[in-house]
Amino acid sequence: MEQYKIGLVPGPVTIPPEILKAWDFNYASSDLEPEFFALYNQNQKLIQKILHTQNKIVITSGEAMSILWAALKCTLNPGEKILAVSSGLFGEGFAEMAKSFGAVAEVCGFDYDDVPDPEKVSAHAKKFRPKVITAVHCETPSGTITPCLAEIGKIAHEVGALFIVDFVASAGGVPLDVDAWGIDIGLWGSQKVLSLTPSLSVSSISERAWEVIEQVNYSGYEAYKDWREVLEKKYMPYTHDWHSMKALNISLSSLISEGLENVYARHAEAAKLCRDLGRETGLKLFPKDEKNSSPTVSAFYVPDKFSWNGFDTALRKHGLAVGGNYGALAGKVFRVGHMGSQANSELVKIGMSIIKLLIENS
Ligand SMILES: *Cc1c(COP(=O)(O)O)cnc(C)c1O
Image (cartoon, rainbow, N blue to C red; front, side, top):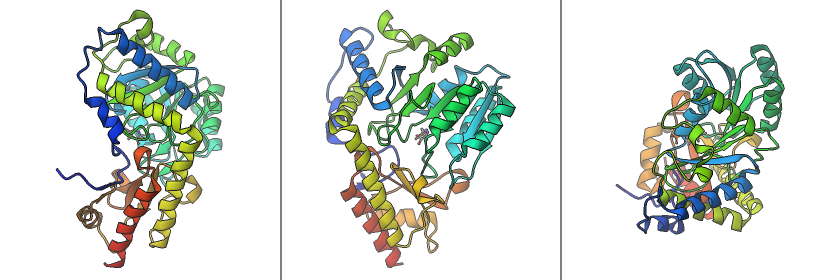
């Protein structure tokens, strides 16, 4: 297939050469070597720093959807209640997933071009009394960032619910404080800000979440319970992905050595440039209020003169790949992913200049 010269898809993002190097080695079995456990532990500590948490970190193989399922199946029995706070496709998805195995789900819903209102969440949670409340930090399809996770976390703790947050497309690139925001289970993927293959998933799990996990006692490939003491027992539930674990180490170390504040600034700058250039080109931003746009992804309406397919094909001819959309936004809204290796103002400038050229010449 073609390797697009200008990759601005909101995940999987372009893997930089220094991370690709992780695959240039034949590792022994991760089950047998103490070195693997040491690498796992080193990654856990780096992740705790980036997520600002003392909670235990679990790193599993599989794309991020595997831990969205794990978080729900390990904390909810059939018949138990979950409130999905939603302003987009991933938010709603939590409710659909939970219903599929018999949990009772309600959605506290907001428009896709908006963000949740904590007062409405509070009223809904007090009435419904769920066991679990879910929220999404960056709604990638909508290009929005939820600003009120700390408030929702407080509400969850007030009603005695576990607070589960999908920060797959934000963590690392956006300020995030798992402990201060009361996030019991935080979910992070590898193919967004971390700029790896879609191969690993990271979960931060609080003590009160572990208690629920032990009670529910779910077993299955994605089950959390056997990950609690992998280091103490020197035993993993399955053969781990050493190459990806090494790649993760390179990625986490580079975020730390760049300095988190600098990483956030690099994302904010690329995002602002993308929106400014989009506006100059006559593109309309999808989020109703620009301040709710995510530093990791910008969502714009597909320009009137184009169908999404026509627009996408023309951009690809110029070597530019951006993201389309799903569900109600399919064909209407497209996304420019400036996260991880793609949070690069030069790259964004080139990408947006191709979009401009295409619009001006149509
Ligand atoms: C990317 C992403 C996931 C993982 O889903 P895939 O579509 O399988 O990549 C989960 N949640 C959010 C918010 C994401 O952006």
